[in-house]
Amino acid sequence: MIDQVTIPVQQVAKSRITEVDFNNVQFGKSFADHMFVVNYANGQWQNPQIVPYGNLSLSPALSSLHYGQALFEGLKAYKNEAGEILVFRPDANAQRLNASAQRLCMPELPEELFLNGLFQLLSIDRDWIPTKPGYSLYIRPVMFATDDYIGVKPSDTYTFLIFTSPVGAYYSKPVRVKVETHYTRAAPGGMGFAKAAGNYAASLYPAQLALQQGYDQLLWTDGREHKYFEESGTMNVVFVINGKIITPSTSDSILKGITRDSILQLARDWDVKVEERPVSVEEVITALKNGTLEEAFGVGTAATIAPIAVIAHEGTEYTLPEVAARKLSNRLKHTLDDIKIGNAPDPHKWVFKV
Picture 1 (cartoon, rainbow, N blue to C red):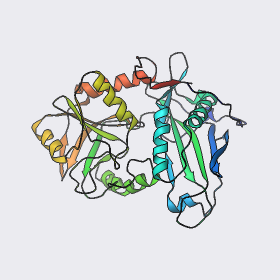
Picture 2 (cartoon, one colour; picture 1 turned 90 degrees about the vertical axis):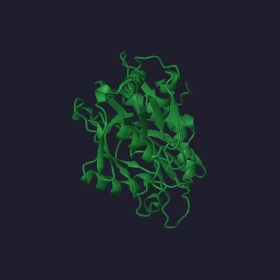
Picture 3 (tube, one colour; picture 1 turned 135 degrees about the horizontal axis):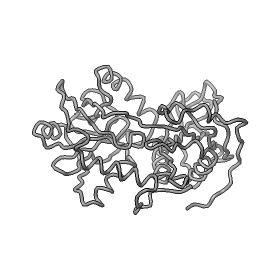
Picture 4 (cartoon, rainbow, N blue to C red; picture 1 turned 120 degrees about the vertical axis):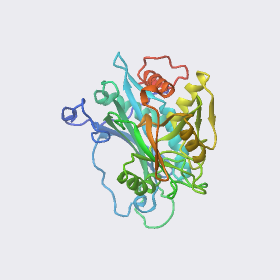
């Protein structure tokens, strides 16, 4: 637990919660009543407050619009059977946010401020947390530069926000993916490991081309040779070959996924062999051809565990085993889901109770 510091709150005049159908929420389309806001100026974070969710007034010269100093995070909150609020690994998100901030020449945010603001925001908007199985409250922290200045340099001022959104499943069915061997998401020495807005902007056009071809996502390959897998757009990627988990080792071009870290830890707890190393396209395609690739799935906060149904490579589609037959990823998903809502032991103390 952290020391709670009371943050000033401006309550909404009237909640919008009655406008939301909690049995049919679209991912990222509805937003809870309040948001946490804190500003950085004169070398320090100051004036934290919780205010009604609403539009921002921004200058056309806002430096983040021109030079891309913007980053974000993503995590989720749940309710257990007793109605208590549970948050999965928010400390890890705070730490990753600061790693991203350092790479983008932005000020780090004290972890205590991140957690205090988040927990009080969740307490105020607790009724927005869905209780339907498979649903959750998605939490979006975001930081961006706010100088009114046209010139290439780090901003002197910043805003940090947290707002929330009730959500269902990000992917409603197993995903079809295409191996990308032309476009590059990130390169060595770049900022692919950071949750930087620009990383996602760079991925949109290739992903749109893949969508037009009937694929939900890309399997990105390395920027040098396009011979090794990196990640899959909104997710890290995991393969199971001959009962062994194989996943690309994280680097400065691969996001250090918190869900990825969690499922690898669970697998090791179960004495499943895990290899974090370069994973070649050739190795995976060969395993698909000879039937030794048993499972492939994406892992991420939004997607949790997303089974991959089809992998396309150089014009050929390879179909993976039916999801129902995938013992390891199904076990990982069910166990992780149970930990998040308090229905399973939490030996690594991942869950924070608000």
